[in-house]
Image (cartoon, rainbow, N blue to C red; front, side):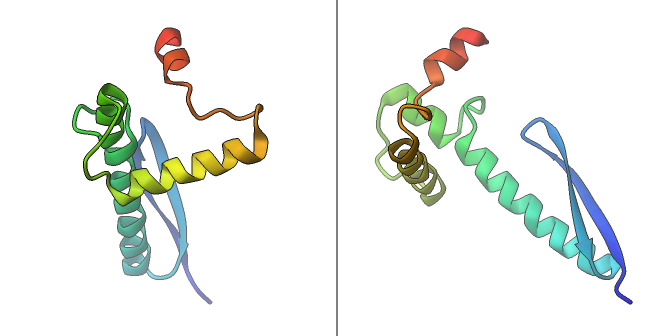
Length: 100
């Protein structure tokens, strides 16, 4: 019978818990990999971190060499906007800033 465990960490101002089947070492290894994915996305897509490419893009309107994570996120947002327009609009920063 396979053991189960969970790995917890904080990301995006919330507690994240990853349920994983396996030994304690497997749980920890899988959790560390998931945490790294969250950290990479949060570092790139945060509108609160000064070094975030998303924040830089919002500030300047362009990036010379945008990271793949940002390009993929923007491409997905554009596809969803095309599919769900006008119900979905990824360009909400002014509204978010106004709301605080």
